[in-house]
Every structure is written in structure tokens, then in C-alpha cells.
Image (cartoon, rainbow, N blue to C red):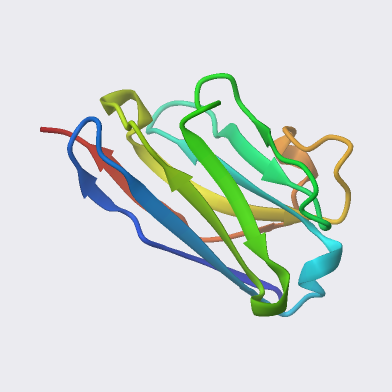
Length: 124
């Protein structure tokens, strides 16, 4: 059974940094795209970043470009999201997700497995 487990969320001050991790199991990790989405109550889940199976490139939403970095370690079946220069607007529940293709990487409906989410709160 496929499983994704996020960790590393918490409370951070504006301007600070946080690193989220995603541990995967139950599927062939190095053949799947990994992405991060985020959601705040009352709003749709939105795309943050994605990285394909070979990790040769990464794609970001404009709102996080230059501040967030997505990465993956295929031998360890893990992925990470390094978040820098955080602002209160980044406050959300962050989800790790995976799909077998990369073509529609920002489309949440394409993702078949999801983690339970990790809360990130940016506040002074």
C-alpha cells in the first residue's frame, strides 16, 4: 500500500526557514513525480513545487520561486521542501503528493497518492 508521510512542519517567524520532509513507501519511488501542494481553510489546494523522477529539473509556483527548493533522494525514498524567507502568506497545511507522469505537474487531480499534511504557520 502506497504511503506518504510528511514531517517538519511547525511555527516559524517571518523571514525564517523551515524544511519539510516526505517519506514514501509502497511504490517504486524513483519512477514517480513528487510534488508539494498547500491549502488554507476555505481555499482550494494549490500547487507549490514539483520534481520529476530523475530530479533533473524542478518547477515552482511563481509565489515561491526563488525562496523554496524541492529535492528528492531516490535511494532513500524521500523528498524535501526547503522553505526560506517565509511570510505569513505561506501559512498553510502542506501536502506531499505523487503521480507517475510529469506532463501536468501542477494539476492536483493528476496525483494519486497524498500524505496527511504538515501544518506550517508563519507568525511573529
